[in-house]
Each structure stands twice: as C-alpha cells, then as structure tokens.
Length: 516
Image (cartoon, rainbow, N blue to C red; front, side):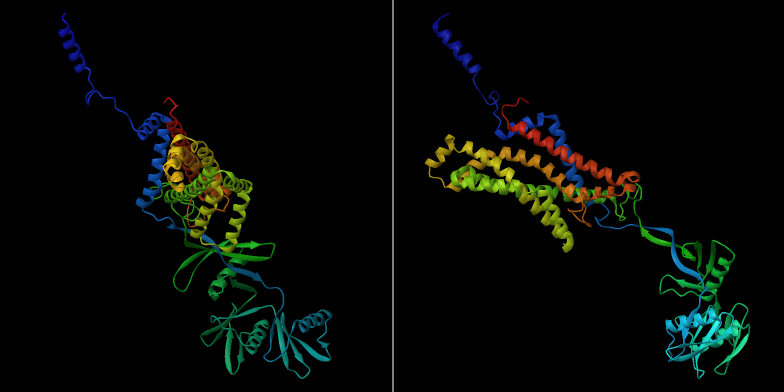
C-alpha cells in the first residue's frame, strides 16, 4: 500500500473517532454529583421521603383539615350531680325577737336550766324566764315578760321564694303546731294548719313545717314544698330514688344516698348535660379520636408537627448563623481573637443548659407569659445555647482552609477581609454545615418535645408533639387511650430518624471518597 493510501486511511480513521456532541463525555457539576451520590443511598432516600410526607402532613394537612387547632367538641350525656342535702333536725334552733339579744351564751344558759329542771336562770345580774310552749318548743323572756327569743326543733319555712317569716309569726305558728292545734290567729288574721304541717291564710299557702332541713347546693335554686315533701317521704320510706315533676312539667330523676359519717342524705339529680367530648375513640368524624380537652387529635397532630418543625428549623438557623459568624472570625484571625472567642465557647459549654431552661420555664409559668410569646422565648433560648458546637466546627475547618492557595490568591488580590471570610471561606464549609444542621434538627426536635412533655415548652392551646405525649402522665390514658400518645410518638420517632438518615446520606454524598 502506498504512503498516500496509508495517510488517507489514517485521516478517515481519525474522522471516525473524533469527538462530536453525541460522543463527548458528559461532566456533571459538583451539585449534580452530590445529588447523584445522595440518591444512590436508599436509606437516605427513604428518610427524605418520610420528611416530605411529614412536611406535607403538618403544613398542608392543617390547611385542608375541616377542624381548627383549638376547636372544641361536645357530647350530651346524663350526669348525676349533687342537687341538695337533707338533715333530720334533732337539735334546738334559735330565733331572736326583734330588737333583743339572744346570743350563744344565753342559749347555753337556757339549756343548762332545762337540764336542771329550772324554769329560770340568771346571767350578768339579769333574770330570765324559760317557758315550755309546746313539745320541743321553748321561749325565753325577761323579768318584765318581754320575750327575747325562742328555741325549736320543728323547722318552719316560708312558701314564698326568698322570703322569711317574721319572729312573731314564727312564734304563733310553732306554738300552735307543737300543741296540736289546727288553727290560730296572728295580727287579726285567721290561719289554719293541715295534717302535713302546711300553714294557710284562707286558701293561700303561707308556710310549711318539717323536721327535715332540705337545702339546695346551688344558692340560686329554690326547692318547692312539693319537692321537699316527696323527698322526705322517700327518705322515711327508705327509697334510694324517686322522680319529681316541677311546675314547668319537666320530670327529673333523683338518687338519694345516706352518708353515715355525717348522718345526712345527699340528693343527686340525673340531668342531661353538654360536656366536652373527651377521649372519644377513633370514629368517622375523628379519625384519631379526641383528647382530654375534646379537640380532634388528628388536627392537633398536624398543627403539633408544624410547631415542632418550625421550632427545630428556627433554632438551627439561630445556632448556625451565630456559629458561622463566631467560628469564621475566630478561625480566620486566630491569635488573641481566636483565644477570646474560644474561651467564650468554653464558658457556654460549661453552662448547664437543661437546669437553666427548667428555671426559665418555671419563671415564665409564674409570670403567666402568653403561650405565643413563650414559644418565641423557647426558640431564642435553645438557639442561643446551641451555637458553640457549630462555632468550634467552623473554626476548625477555616483554620485548615485559610492556608490553602486560593486564600493566598485572595489576599494577593487585595480582597477585603469580610469578603474573604464570607465569600470564599464560608461557602467551602457549607457542605459540613448542612450535614451538621440536618443532624442537629433531630436533636432540637427531641429537646423541644422533652421540654413540652415536662410542661416547660409549648403551652396550651398550641400543640406540639411533645405536649401531646404529655397526656401519658395519666396512667389511665397510658393504658386505655393509645390513640392519644402513640401517633404523636410515631411521628416524632419517624421525623427524627428521617433527619438522621438524610444527614448521614448528605455526609456520604459530600465526601468524594465514598463509593456510592
């Protein structure tokens, strides 16, 4: 073959293997290489997927939820509430005449005179006369016949709500009743007493008499005579329950229980009440049930995730900004600047952060700080206590980077110091900073959850995964209401685990020596 043919074949061969657009080797950018290494790590991808789900669940879920974070739900149920108390009177009660004095000392002297069988006694040089007006009905008078008071065991009550009988009326009624009389006269008016002890003036009911004292628990409740009569009749017959229809036609059920310790009867009224729908099990309306305040658990879980994630990110932003500034200055300038900043870091490392947070939380409880302001304080405190670790890491990285050739070039070009640090040094430590922040997010969320669980973090009505789990302080909730604390615990576990997996994947992706 001639030399010309060989040259021709070589030129054809060269043309065939020349690099055109299709045959060029594609070179990935550093960011694309990092992404490629990251997505080759399956566990990191799983962690990223979990984080995406948690963000959508917390931030988007709260928006599409049909309920508000602090919306309360109610249910109707029958409750037995203490309605009245009953005492069978077997001791003397006292009433004082108008304008007279019948104090406890004179009452005691009267009792002593009765026990001795005397019909008089002397107190402070004043003579008193004791008169038995009827069975268990005594009057006390001065020497001149002026009555100062009466002692009685039969209780007389006015039939008119909010009114009481005058002393003279009480005396005439009790004297007639205790002597078995069926009629008497008072102030020129004729009165009658029926067998049940009801006093009438003509056809108008005035008062009624009984040995049982029936008092309503609530001061604004008036107990009618009919109710008291039916109640005392039930007590006399030993009945434990009875029903009564009031003047408005409303029928109610009552339970009567005897309290041996106090020798009284307690009356419970069974009424339909509207109460908080607390600890309702999962249902169509509430997929994860309701909590102790009657709020939808699924909605609280969504808003709780939002709060926990926001606190985690803001705390990490504060810590990393402070850490980058302090660490960058310390690592670049060195000498006395480095010594001062590192001693400050050492001081922060010596601060017992948990006791300080507990003390500050107790102080905010005492000052009743608004829950929203308290949450801001919590983020600032956690962020301010977390920056020393970041500063020390950044300092170490910058100490090694500042001696490299590109930094020598920036110095030779006369670039300003601040630009050298934040334009050339800091970007070179961003990969390590991103990994550190990602790993730290999980720890911050755990810290917030711990403080909220102890009652020192996020406060009601705001929700966080930590204060949702706080309900397990009640052993009944721990054993019977799994839907209260298990979902929040699972969300917390998955989120922290996912942040750790993503951080681990980023660390491997930024390391060019890793063969992923």
